[in-house]
Image 1 (cartoon, rainbow, N blue to C red):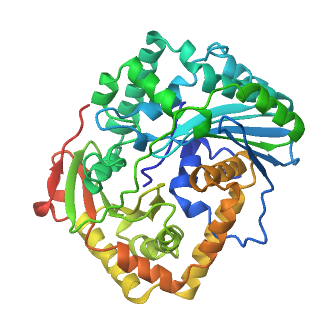
Image 2 (image 1 turned 135 degrees about the vertical axis):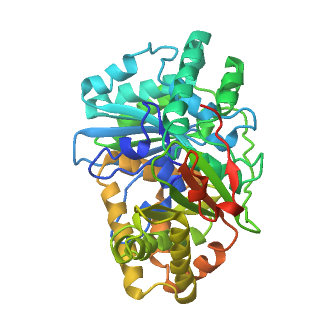
Image 3 (image 1 turned 45 degrees about the vertical axis):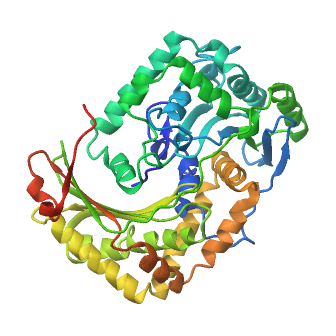
Length: 481
């Protein structure tokens, strides 16, 4: 389960939308928040050539040539996500992801699609806890159009935003919440964990999509003020990857973005890591046919060195047939129909999670007990050399396949600049991931996968007795459907 899964403007999870290239183009929110895909290659074997510079208004620009195909990916990544919102005023970042596709000062509604999809390309956007990003994939001779479109959204969006457009997009977002969260089986799990792990008011304690109450209460002036602060050139990175003329591209960037004024200095939420002193046990009665067990621990964000060993731990526990939890629960003992596990690293905080779906005739209590025994062995003995090698090899393959597309390289370079001030940070990622040892994996398993966790049983309505250790659990109520 990935709390930081971006929500794209066309109503799809970007994890599915940007499985775009069978090439496996990497998702921006996942690149920043789930480093599993960005780790294990040797630094000497992978190189993404790039040039980085900055305009006078603070806009970071990254250029990377790749002549393999006559196509170009253009991306604007804003360093703003749901964590920059305030309690009672949530959902603004995601709402703007939608508003940005309704036209801007010089771009009437529909023209954006005509100049991208209409010429054989595409466009989309996504929002996560930490970033909001918008991108175009176009033939090489449409690079100027893509730059013009993005600059107009950055500099002149509010000129075209009226109450009718705002209300329409707010209703669309509300409907998206109904469809993808409130009426989706297991759809509220992510926000339940956010509220359970992080104290009220913590920047990661509310969902990216926001709440119905906050969306209803937000005025058009509220969201305009949010835009003025965060959607300025000094809070953005423009990345161009593909087959283009760098000299001409620089001229177009200066022409279309140079006149947009710098925004005010931004005060960002502080790094607020969390540890739980004891377990929390929750039960959600949901409209599901099959119960499911979810366990989550607070861990660390992308800037903490332990994220690398946690990534490897997740790959060792679940995934292929040989992974420990998968092998034990699904194949050897045939207790579970499916298992997933992994580290989700946001910018400032992270979570390690496990989810298990039982086979008929088996209970969530059984699954929890057997999962705990597998984790206990990992804490006691650590991984084998073979497990470590397999996990790193799988992660390396996933990363390399992500770089087969221009869009995959765009996200890799842009997130390096946004989070670390270095488009080439991926090389450091590689080295640190490659350096993870069996001792590192054992250490983080003991340090983070402790009794301080949240255990959530999602059960059919009226079947609370199917929860794991139900008598000790606290019921979770739905926000409202």
